[in-house]
Length: 84
Image (cartoon, rainbow, N blue to C red; front, side):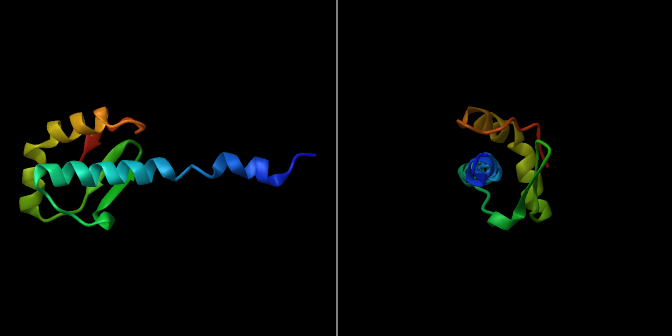
């Protein structure tokens, strides 16, 4: 019988991709000039949701293509479909 630690090792990195994606989104937003808190970024099924004030949302829509292009070049990230 195999040890349970070998079985659980598969699940040790499940949340790391979300954390890496969140960090990359925050870095990309900082490069654009939008500063948000870590808790303002949510990730669901390949979409990135950012909770900011309306002026920030319009700025985000202006730079959405740049943001997605930056995230596509970031190594080790899952595919990002949309930023809302």
